[in-house]
Structures are given as structure tokens and as C-alpha cells.
Length: 224
Ligand SMILES: Nc1ncnc2c1ncn2[C@@H]1O[C@H](COP(=O)(O)OP(=O)(O)OP(=O)(O)O)[C@@H](O)[C@H]1O
Ligand SMILES: [Mg+2]
Image 1 (cartoon, rainbow, N blue to C red):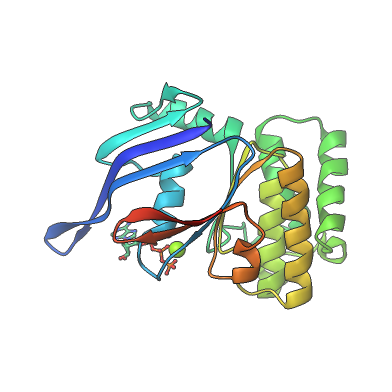
Image 2 (cartoon, helix red, strand yellow):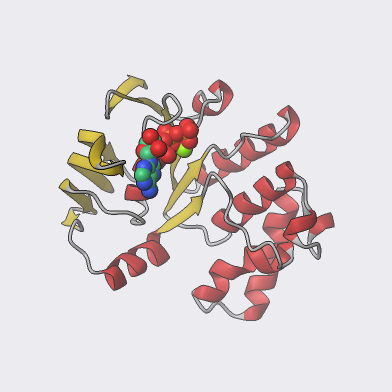
């Protein structure tokens, strides 16, 4: 098993008291799975992805990665976990607005100190795959919503991580662009990447092997 959550509890402060968002949540992810997570706005989907990505902590429960308990890592160890294993397409994209498209996509590769030449060829390939080569030199602040979304996806997949976490990755895309993104996700899945995708979109979830719904603070299996 690649990832296993058991008995997870996560609360946030709401006014003067703490309110639990996730409670006694279990989740098992096998290597190479493609998983869709659905659920109403505010039910905790992004919170769950943030936990899986090692970005936020939880109060109760355990998280295992490849059988090792990683619940109590130091912040340096969490950073290492993220760097080695995780890529994220966040809901607000988190792009660097004052840099151009190429630089944004190259960032995770510079972070792992990949040689410049390889960075260039990798970035050019994803630019081409996502049909944003024309925008390579443009600043993020000048792009449309759908273009930004494609840059965020490109930046996440360029590293070819073992786990891709994507939060509503096709939210503001037209049907045709969405299809090309789904094709890319299929390719990544065939390469053995593990995909965990939060989505409201049935055409995205029907592309996944497993569908869960986050409901009443837990994950419920919808189908296979
Ligand atoms: N840092 C935080 N501090 C306080 N409350 C938070 C924090 N992050 C999330 N919440 C609350 O936790 C709940 C779950 O938020 P989350 O973003 O996980 O929902 P979601 O399922 O992703 O919703 P959406 O579909 O709208 O993106 C919400 O009520 C939200 O207000
Ligand atoms: Mg969300």
C-alpha cells in the first residue's frame, strides 16, 4: 500500500471553538491508483488533499507511506516527503504572477537541481502537451483563467511525481481542453503515477478507477 490514513481527525478554529472537519477518516491508496474525491463545498476535500500532501497536520490518527508511519515527521522531513513524492495542482493554482510561464513550470525541476538542458526539454514537452507553448514567455498575470489552470497542471506533472494531488483541475476549462487534460491524466496513470483528484465533474471522475465521496467527515466508497 502506498498511502494509508486511519482514524484521522482534523479540526479548525471557528470563532472561539474548534470544529472538526474530518473525523475517524480512513483511506487506502495503492500505487498506481486513480481516485476521484467528490463532496459538497466546504466538506473538507481540500483539507484532505493538504493532509495527503503533507501541508497541514492532523490531531488524531495515523498516516503511513509505503508502510512507514509518517504521522510525526519533523518539518524538514515533511519537506523531503513532498519534494520526493508529491505534486500538487491547488485550487487557486499558486502560480508566481510576476514570472513567465516557462519559469513557473521550471521551478520544481530547479528545486530538485535538474540540469538546465533537461529542464528545457521537459518544460517544452509539457508546454506542448498542454497546448500552451504560445504563452511560454508571457507573465502569469496576463493569462486567462483556463491558461493559468493549464500552467498549474504543467508545473505539477513536469516532475513526474509518484503522487499527483489535483484540486478541481478542470474547473474553468472548456470541453475540448478538458478532454486533452484527461488524456494527459490517462497517460500519467498508464506510466504508473498515482492520481488523487478532487472534482465535481462526472467526466473526470468516470475516468478514475475509484470514486469516493467525502460525506459526514468521512470518505465513503461510491464505486469501482
Ligand atoms: N485554515 C483554516 N482555518 C479555519 N477553517 C478552515 C481552514 N481551512 C478550511 N477551513 C474550513 O474547513 C472546512 C472545509 O474546507 P475545505 O477547503 O477543505 O472544503 P472543500 O471541500 O475543499 O470545499 P470547496 O469544494 O468549496 O473547495 C470549511 O468550512 C472551511 O471554512
Ligand atoms: Mg476545496
